[in-house]
Length: 145
Image (cartoon, rainbow, N blue to C red):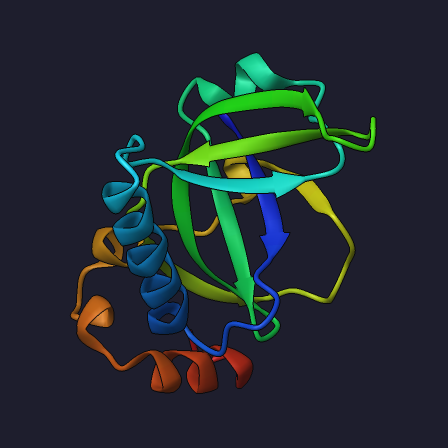
């Protein structure tokens, strides 16, 4: 089973906010002739890289709820210009909405076991994927989803 990462999406108000940021960054990369991959820089390097890139995703916590995921394709450790070790989390630039689940704030990222990861909304059926995000958030906050 793949291992996932969980990270706060600071500044985003919704999945559509994050989608807009991704689209903007992809357009910048296209104009610069760079590969169409999304990079997120983080300070700590996961030690279980093989388990993560073998089908894992980065699950985004938006406004206190796990809301969406992106498939991780690579993790690239590097040292920045100031000599500080960091890494690029390389993701497919496609967001997959998941069943919203409350999650308290934390710093950095956390490992997320496959059995603890929320299901994709598309896998749930019953039209949950078409429901407006704000409504899903409110229903999940009330414990109804």
